[in-house]
Length: 309
Image (cartoon, rainbow, N blue to C red; front, top):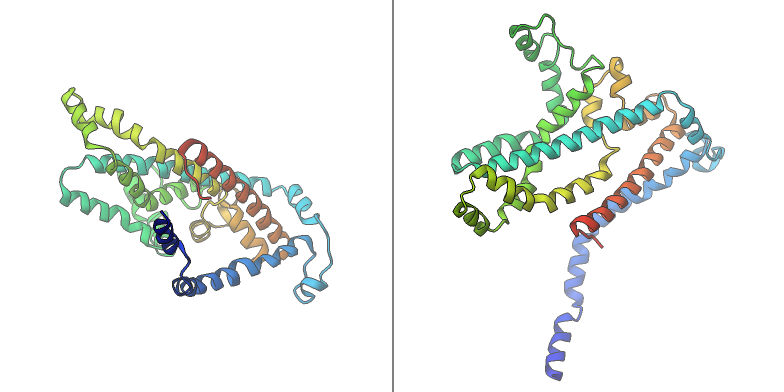
């Protein structure tokens, strides 16, 4: 027994050389995190100051919660929050739905050649930046673009200004995000499908279940834990409507429906040089996002058994 305990202690005993190597490998990432994530947090004080760049942090007058009260009274701020929630929730819901459906359909394909080909084609948009995709779709969705030419060809009387009409802008942004991301999002659902025991399908086949019934009564119920997990974890992104996409594709005509929190912060902070106000907006968003992430992990632990700590 003593020999066994000695052997276990020898295995579990920290090895200084191995640890130092691992710590050395972690050092660049740790330094990067400190420099670009933790040190900039000191700028939060700007939200509580009437910040003047020439005076700096220590010379600018302290105004407390003035800018937060100012935000509450701004007539456009509530609309910005509504825009953010509609676009973000629409993206999360439809991307999840399309990813699940695509994973189910792809799983039913028997030809490996077509399956791999379709996977490659559908995954590809995920790897392109919004700068590239935005430039392409700004042309495609213009009044003289290919999509409007097709709309006129099939019998509509006038073209649709997708990027310049408040009725269509939100829906256009949501659908473009879904098109870009649903293939990549399906990977985790495909992985969950491959973990389903083949004996379940064999038993269902013996009982006379067709492929649709097998998907309905075996595949989807087996996927529910990962679906619940991904849905709860996405709660933390409710206030992230996609800055790059909106910034590249929106314009002043659609501010009333397309302006989100991130673009709002950009405009008032960098364009209008209202640094204190923009920092207050960013801080408020970060606090709410932090609370939502905490809630999402609690729900994930409760309903899907997922824990980080």
